[in-house]
Length: 348
Image 1: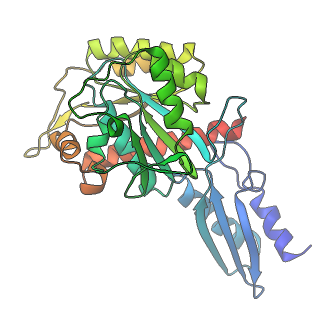
Image 2: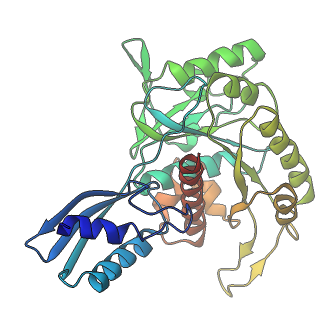
Image 3: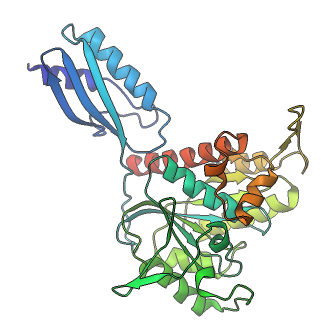
């Protein structure tokens, strides 16, 4: 048996603990080479840019190769990621692998702020990301994104402006700042169709969609137009928000869109002076809800005035405040979303 095949046989014993399959079957191992009879080089291509298991795999591969093959003295592993694409009979946007709607049962829970920071967190983790502000009644991402200027049209397609590598399209780019948007169902459907298919999104791993609060036409239209990988629902801890979240989740199920999980925003406030945690909205009801419906809390984001003010000032919180507790929570949420999507695709 050749040394290369010996290495492959060892790697077949290393199992992904989340997927239950070995890393050779999962096609994670690329560019495997034996250098000078004593060194093994390879590229490990995982399914999520924020995969929490990359250090685990690296350690397991190195340990097993050195223990089981006496000739191996050095192991060099480059880590890469390629987001898997789902199979769907529904219409797809060319080049876009996953569309993730972010929604809420009611307004005022920070849905847009969560959506934009998740998008930029995913981009920072190495993914190709787009952000679609589909909140036709209150498009705020045009302001939060900090992008000025008109959208360019090339070859009959809109070219989305970019901020720090994230491609952004907002309803707000096409309306007057102080004019109310009074659109009925058919017009909403037509507008969403244009924002999805008449935009040159290019190659994207994730397109984050900020939908308006509630359970109306935009979610119904979007689910009819394209395959949605799974929804993220944003809530705050108090009873009234959770009551409306239940409706938003039920709406997802009615239009046959899976639920990735719930984000609890303004979950608590940590005193900067003493470090004490205060539940300013009372004891959370979100934990009870997710347990009841069989999903999970993707993360709990602290109440942070600067998370709001950064958006008002056109700043991206996760880029501006990299060492904050809130930023860590938002990156953890982004990692969980990407990991859940990859696991669901590979299990099918």
